[in-house]
Image (tube, rainbow, N blue to C red; front, side, top):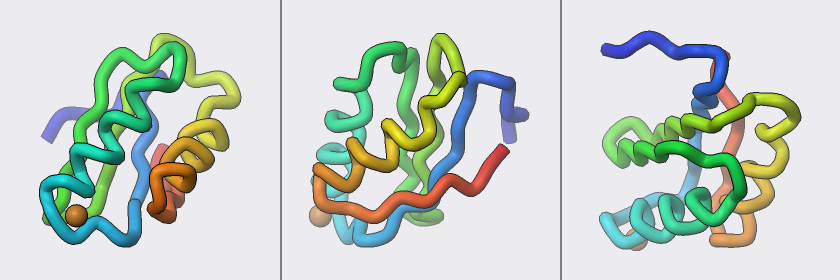
Length: 77
Ligand SMILES: [Cu+2]
């Protein structure tokens, strides 16, 4: 497993039931400015988001994922 760098945020997301949920979340997160990469792992319900700057972004992603219809909680770092 790769290590988390300073600009990578990890979230636990509730409500993903299929691949289109994962795609839906990925699309919503990619619309947030500053996102470099998004990995949605459905088996573990985790969403890993790599950004160009970590500053104050966690709440923005929680909101973006909520607007897509899912509940996200930051788990790390
Ligand atoms: Cu689904």
